[in-house]
Image (cartoon, rainbow, N blue to C red):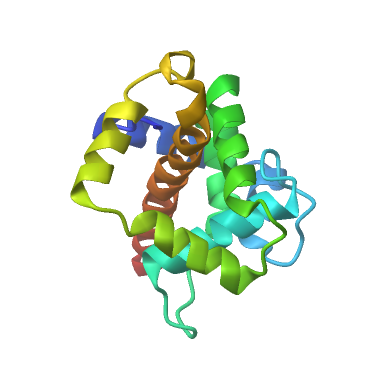
Length: 170
């Protein structure tokens, strides 16, 4: 899990906003039509997972506009706050979530199912996430990677959403 404690999140956001001044990063955050600037989420399947997670987690109204593109924000956070191993785990998890050539509604349905788990399952997953991938049994690695992706992207989406809301109010 991208263990972003409040202080670390603020530090990462400050670093990111420093990066956002660069023309490429600014284009990535505010140009919602050009996908060529992504550093980590290069594959459409990765961006689809983040887009559908945004829809499932935030449940935005169709007419609700954000100050900047949350998928691009998530990409920048993945590129600038995680080490290479964490990024690789997150992307492998996204690939496992998107496996099977799913349509966007099917992907959203699959994500809702991954979020709708019992308290016992949730406790097991949280205990599993405290381990490194080498400590996870081979039969549980796919589940580990899926939830590694979910927890990491969820934190970045929420951070981006509330940052966007704060910027919009300014």
